[in-house]
Image 1 (cartoon, rainbow, N blue to C red):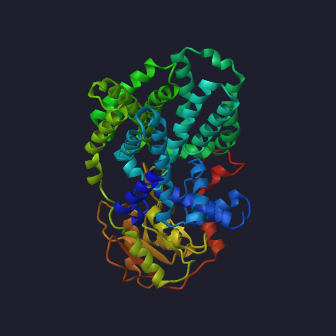
Image 2: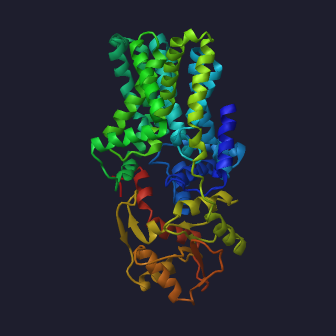
Image 3: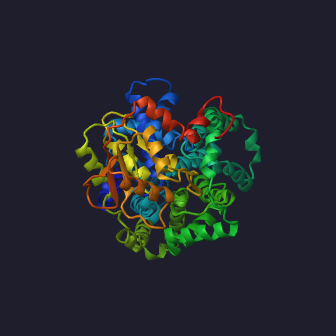
Length: 528
């Protein structure tokens, strides 16, 4: 509970609770996917899930579910039901996951170091830059790291006992990890490494071992089979750096997050864990989990980001605690209780990381909110369609959806779907329209009430943004610029009275959204 209060207080202090969605590009989709499941439950489970999701995506086209597994969103839905679906409330869910990570570190180190030093080591985890940033965002990383950590520890418990209960728990946690983020597949490396190090390959002959993959297959298998076509969308436009480049990036990220003192302690703790592998299974698991994940990152060949290291941090802190235990024993000549020696050492290390908190870059004031509030004050209806700006699609869609009383009702239109053709990662770009006449013809079929457009455009701006701006300004009989708050965006309103029924709007928009809707069709031959 204390860890949770610390993280919640940090969120408030940093301004994350009132910041705009979109601190990371995926954040809006993680929020909206959970909101969709909440709305589906609130609707009384009206209709088939895929039918509801397709209609929801047509109105609020910024969902991550399908490409991303569903479990984090399944957690968000009851959380929203209990605490509300405003950003500040939902942000407390990642805070809880971070608190549970620190709590697990405390639980593992309490008997080794004593409660005070174990608590300080858990606090040290919360001060790592990657976790500080993650605690300001609605992302899956904290949950992914927690479930993988627990799955590894549960497997260690099975190594010690061979029990059915431990096997069932390991399979359940591994499946939940995979249903949170597919990167959890790295856990498959853990069993063979443990068997190799402790020399107990005969454990494979135990029937309880095979309960683990069976549970994973039952719980995760149907999802991966159903969404396998959609998952491939997320790899479009990604660069594939060389393995040495990834290794250097991971090393630099570890240095930036942990610092040399902690890295030295972690390596020392890993060496102790390997030396005592047969006697201390939990420490061995903590030594191998970071190694397995680093191997996965090298094999995946993606550019390293600081958040990728979050699954490494908690087991690494346990290894640092193992090293502190050894150092405390070496300093027994000080004639102080070992617990207090460990506490002093942990406090000194924690104090050395305090500048990390002081130098944390707080998110800027929410620039999206004033525009959303202005449109709401100008037009109280919730069915007015809106073309959001290409540079802030997710933040605007999420900000509008967070305040809607009736969802999905309003059509939010994305330029990256309707005005241009881009891949998932915006690695390639092609404008759909070349003239004002073509654009006006589109808007006659798709009469959007409000258009939000970047206020500052130049020759470096995207062609579709420049064409849209020139079309709106050249036709005052169709659009007028509203007196919206000065900032990054202009707001235009369509004034010629042209309208379309919701079914007509949905029919036109669905033709631009086939990249997400078609792969989920049971008869789909592949990604469109």
